[in-house]
Image (tube, rainbow, N blue to C red; front, top):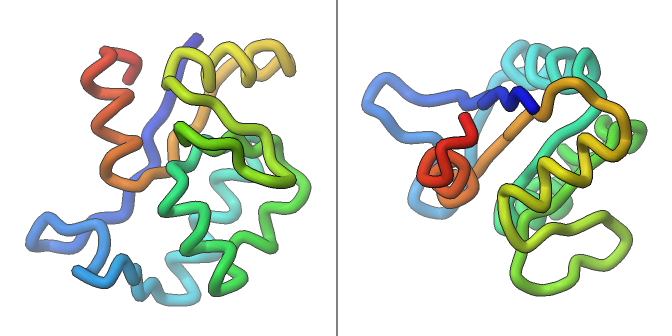
Length: 116
């Protein structure tokens, strides 16, 4: 299965601030949501999912297949404990590509497993 990484990074190489905030413009959010909807699925790490859920930025993604990468069950969503399991779950739903949406630990786990 082909997997794609969608990551917004600042000019100095950071994907979020030290407090995990990612202060994106409305234009950046709109581009992100559009790209995710084109693919119909998304893999997020637990911290990124909790952050997006907490500030409601997850709401526009209610109609996509979301997999949260976590070592502990995540209520109400599909979760996987490894990148390989996340890809398997997405493939089982018939998607030709998996979209990886962060955060840094999730991105690194897919890179380390040579899945990007």
